[in-house]
Length: 151
Image 1: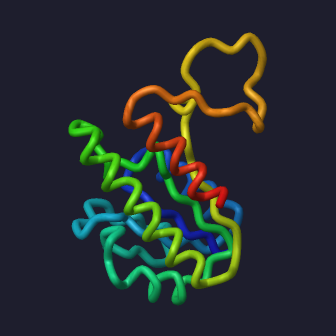
Image 2: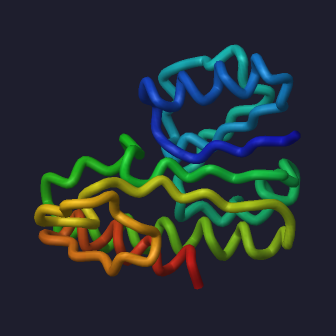
């Protein structure tokens, strides 16, 4: 299987790369940054491009993934210090990725969200059909990202 990981460098990314390699999958990585700090030797191909790059369509076409995983809430390219500005940048980045992904017409797209889309207390497990109740720019932006991917 061809796996295309999208996101900044972090331990979760390291773990996913190691797991997919152990299982015999071919892993590609889009870092979302022009400056690749880590070599990631277990990655078949690493692309150091930002999410607004005009090369996204070509990258998706070249990789032709069976599954694409966007780190979403765990993407270290987004710092969330200036939340309004970062929310705009995050949403436009996700839209650019989604447009490029939709051009391939192949594979699954997995978006990693977080518990931030649910605020408050829940007495039982949160079901998939539970409406989101995000608070704050980051939580609302992540919830909006879920809707973008769902559509």
